[in-house]
Image (cartoon, rainbow, N blue to C red):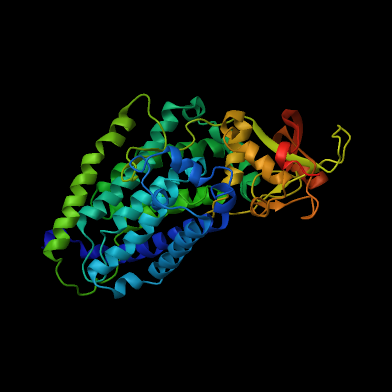
Length: 473
């Protein structure tokens, strides 16, 4: 069955599988270190409360069957272990069916996490990791050459990621068509990185070139993924370079990295393929059946892409098998940040000793330079960016965050860079204020050492304390 496999892509498959396993490891590690405060039994959006009102068929998950913090921790740490084993190449040491089952384990575990993760797991890269992870199950191991149809489906995902993102930009904010979006984007993006300040201060003509190059990469180059070699390899390489540029300019969790990983099996690396046996019949039947089903499901993201009402980052089935993607259909012109403060005073006043909580990734102290966290995902910091855009985004969870801070909840404080209050003396009151942030100029940076300048806008949350049964004596 030589028509079924493409031995020239064996090295691309190998690199893709190891890199994908690394991203799985990051995703499970992120879940393991953050879940208790976010979705745990005492989290801001507890899983037990979610599964009480959402049926299994709408959100299939192991945690629909049973949930406890200990069980969740066991699952995500098991996901870390399996991902590490795949990263080390354990699937290559197993028979074909064993390798497929091993790749299925992290997909089932991470699907279970995402489907109960609620707003904390509502990002497009969650569905993208699941869609790509499901395809990896059928990509085979060292016993067979990579199946052509699975390689095609991986290119089809990459096409939808890039082309969908390009379309949403052209249909969305006019600044993309005017080539001016990067005048604002590096300053207003969800979580700036250590180089974002410098990207923002690049000459405006270079920003225009960046946007134009982005349009070419997202609206033209994706079609070349289906061209003969070496054109397809060149298209994939161009996408990798573009994504690395984005990695340098900000913190977007593993969005850029998984796009890079998707481009790897497109490249025909110059290496002699190893001798492999022919694909067994059962494997051919399974791969073709699954591929046919996925192609059938693809009509929904295609309809979305051609629609004038295109939406970003939508999953069309509870298993996240085929999804639609996109990013930054609109770009904010002004950056707002919610600054959370506490005081130990019994009666809060404007002149009370208000102390600011420091987050790990989101801007706070104007003198603190942003750090690089991606591909690690700081979920609370990202949602704080949305909260600054509109209080409606914070409605389901912000009150619970304030309550946990008033209790000096250990798990919640682990999500922060620093709490201004000792463990034995939590604050009496918490308040939140909205500030406008802007990057300083070169001159301001030299004079003050601050990369941000901030201006008070309005009250976001008035001074709040614990009441009723939870009130401290």
